[in-house]
Image 1 (cartoon, chains in turn yellow, brown):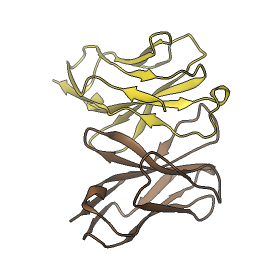
Image 2 (cartoon, chains in turn orange, green):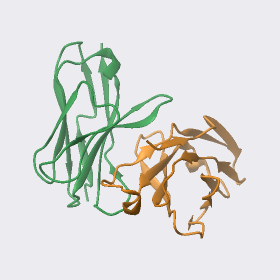
Image 3 (cartoon, helix red, strand yellow):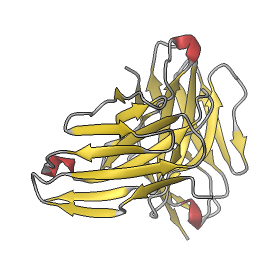
Image 4 (cartoon, chains in turn yellow, blue):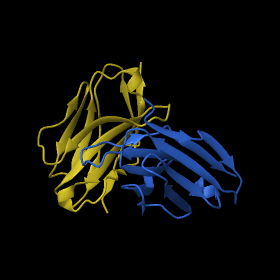
Length: 119
Length: 113
């Protein structure tokens, strides 16, 4: 079974600065999908960004971007110009793809990184 | 635009009591999921359903049962609650598409005393 590791239980950043959250995953598959979710104190799970493994170009969504290193099995999330509203728990997640024998669409999540944004 | 609706939002049970967590989605998604979230453990999959009439075990299914009542609804039942089942429970749904994200409900905080 695939495992997702988020090695930083907690991180902090100053408002307007940049922070990078790390995520590594253990897989022998070549076809898969990666996701970052944000969970603010409201408990709502919000999709931040996603990446297809066969696309080498790193995904970007406004201030959020990823550094996808397939060979290193790394999928880090960079938040630029951090805002107070970015304070949340962030989860990295993995999904097996069809060409890897995936037969369903479930996600495997890491344990999360709690991000604090200091004013 | 409701998305995924879970009820109740909070629940306190005594050990041995039973209850059903309800979940409904209005996005016409085929796949639905139940996860539990515990501090320091992330989200772990309890059960999922790829289509109406099918259910499969996830990572932590013991002590739970599910019913995919129709395409919209996917319920989670605790037959005899235990303190180890104290957790936040999330229902989610997705299209049957590899790139499709999961859409989550707002969660149920369950405490078993």
